[in-house]
Every structure is written in structure tokens, then in C-alpha cells.
Length: 148
Image (cartoon, rainbow, N blue to C red; front, side, top):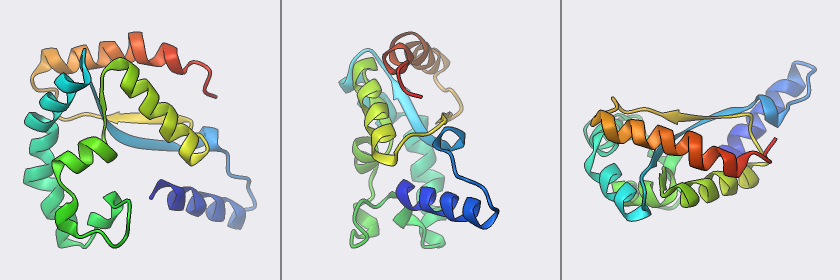
């Protein structure tokens, strides 16, 4: 889906007489990091991210036929978009090394971006979310310092 977003950015820039630049592109993803990928998956699937998708996003997106934004294949049924699917394919969840690899893969897949906005979900429980952000700053970002 992000590739089509970039195509729209390029088209809009062209219509405005400008050149699109990946470094000015901002994208957003759910990001959650724990010491191990198993722990991060468990906490993401049992925490506020899962709650927000189950109680709000799934219903709202389905109502407006927008579940397609998560589909890796347009022929997927909406029912295939589960929390497990999101944690495996859309959200960036895992250990610091796994999250760094996923961010790098996303960066390479879309041709680069300027900012990745890590979406927040009420920071509950606060200590786990603070740990996730500390791991992002101290262990993940240094692994990505070569990205422009």
C-alpha cells in the first residue's frame, strides 16, 4: 500500500511543478519493542495496540470498506486481517535487532523515507512503553544510522 502512497506523492509533486523527495516523506507504523520478539509479540497482542484495533480500528475501517489498507493481496478476505496478521505483516514488533531489520526492510521496500512516526496507544502499561521507546532510541536507531 505504501508504494501507491509514494506514487500519489510523486504525482502531486509533478502537478505542482516540484520534485518529490523521499527524505521529506513521513510514514506511520505501530512500533513496539521488548527484550525478545516473543515478549514483544505477546505484549502487543494482549495490550493497548490490540485493544485499539479490536475495539475501534477494525470496526471503523470495515464500515468504510478500508480494510484493504492492510492487505498484502487485494484478494484477501477482510476476515484474514487479524491481530496476528498485523503483528506479523504490518506492525513493527520485536526485539531491538528484529525491529531494526524490519525498519530497514520497510525503508528499502519503499525507496526510503524521512520520518517513521511510531504510533502510540495510551502508553499503558507505562513502564513497558517507556522501555520500548528506550530500546528504540538506544538499540534500534544506532543500527539505522546509515539510512538517509
